[in-house]
Structures are given as C-alpha cells and as structure tokens.
Length: 397
Image (cartoon, rainbow, N blue to C red; front, side):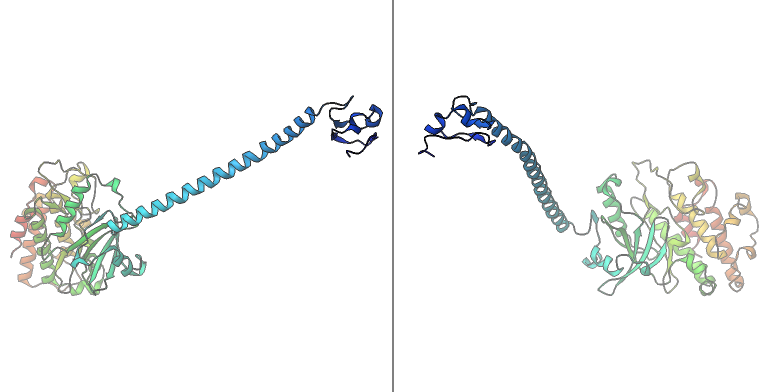
C-alpha cells in the first residue's frame, strides 16, 4: 500500500478511514467518489470524528444493555448469599437453643430424671390415634409406655401454648411445679408439663380402669362398682378436694370436677385427675377468671360472676356424688332440689342405680346420710354450702 503512487477506488461503497499514504493524499476526488463511508485527511473527504463517534455510540449502547444485566445478576447472587448465611445462622441458633432447652419453652418433666419430650413422642408414635384413650374439650389423652416400662397418661392440648399466651411465665412455672408436689392417695400424680413448638401436654400417672364416666356408661363395668365401692369413691373425692382447698398453700380449686376427670385404679380407689385448668387462690388476687369447666357440673353462680372460690368445687362435687349413686348424670334431678327439701324424708329408691342389687338396710342408712350431705353441697347460695373439709368429716361414717 505504501508503494502505490496512484489509486482509484471509486464507486465501491467503502467505509472507514483511508490510509495516510501518498497515493491517497494525492488521489483526485473522482478516484475516491462513490464511497460515502470513507473518512480521513484527504481533500474532499469528511474527517473521521463522526465515524469514531458512531463507534463510541455503538459501544455505549452495548454497555447500556450489558451493564444492567450484569448488575441484576450481581444483585441476585448477593441476595442468595445473604439468604444462605441467614439460614445457616438461624439453623445454628435453633440448634443452640435446642441444646440449651431440648424439651421446649416450659419443661419440668422430672419423672426419675428420664421423662423427656422425645421419649413421649416416640412412645405415642407422634401422638397417633391408636394410642388415644380419651378426648375432652381442652385436649386428648394418650397412653404412653416409656423405655423403662413405666406407663403414663399424656394429656395433649389441642393446640400448642406459645409463650405470648402466658402472661407471667415465672408464675406459670411456679404453679405447675407446685402441682407436681401434690401428694394425696386420691389425686392422680402429675409428673410434669411440656410446652413445645409442636406439642403441649401434661404427663400423669396412668390408671388402668379409666374414668368413672366410662365405667358408668357400661352396664357390665357399672355392675362391678358396687355400693361399698361407690360410697368409697365419694369419700375419696371429698378427701382429695379437702386436701386441695385446706392443706395446700395457696389453695387450689380444680374447676373441672366431673366423672370424666375421676379415674379409678384396679381396687376402685378414686383419683381426681386433670389439673389443666386448676386455679390457685391467692390472697392478694381477685381470683377472677374466664369460664371453664364441664357443663352440668359448673356452679350456678358462674353464670353471672367469674370469681372462682372453693365453693365452685363443692357444687361440682355434689353433682358428681349424685351421679355415682344414680349411675348417670342427675340433670333431671338437680332442678327439683331446694333447701326445704333437705328437711324432708329422702326417697332413695328413685335415686339408686337400678343396675345394682337393692342395698342392705345398713347401707341404705349410709347412703341416706351421704345424700343429705350432698344436697347441702348443691345449695344455690355459695355461702350456704359447706366447705370440703366439713364434707369430708361428715362422710367419715
């Protein structure tokens, strides 16, 4: 190219800068025409600034397209990295919290130091229906056999109890711990309580005969529960409530005395169960609470006041005692009871469970005495009902 002296590239539609050589500098206009895209320092030709600007604009356009794509990719990778790091930190925190408190928010399961959340879940196959032995308004009861061979009853709440539903966590734990310290032959032993993210439950002593409600609903089982055993059941419940009201500090009101919450052992000994809604009566508290209990057993005053007293349990005991004697809930009988009726002769025949043989004369007299005490417990006025301590003493016949 540098050795050329004359050049003619006309009408070739060329473009771009021409070489800075003698042949191009000395070329005539006619030798270069027909190539609108050429530029350079040749006579009659446009300088190359426009071409360079065109190339720069093309590069800018490519940059404007590529940069946002690369930016979006970088932002996406950053977000993914942040998510992974947070997930790892969260998992690490969960593992650390799990190691610190593997049984949940509240856990005082202390049966021989071995009763733990994982054992309960495994023993019930994650609370499978085949292990369920009863259902109630607040939860279901499961039978669980632990690795040690010990059988316990698990009262699992229908929904977990998150920490924000517990107003005072320390007070709550104190009350549950107090319940684990209860020692009475007629009260089911509470081993502990667990509140977990998945499950919340109470752990109780297991009694093979089950609830009084189940026994009375079966003719065969009810016939096994003779008059002596039934009077003993009534006395046992009275003793248990007297203990809760008068020998515990602060006093404990069960609030849900009913046949479904009364369990019998193999010797037909009564055991008051299910303290899931029990209330501690504190002298510095108003002891007002929301409605709780089983319809048909709840004291009538709770229809217009939410103040809990021991007399609420006294009324429920009266209903339960009549149920033991009649063999069924005395709902049709309660409306006819009044204070004046207590002074009249009591016809036992209409009150006795017809599935049992007629009681002997001595047993009839004992039953009559029991019924008189029971009627006093059913007085519509809470102040007129006796205390459970008095009831317990009167039933020692």
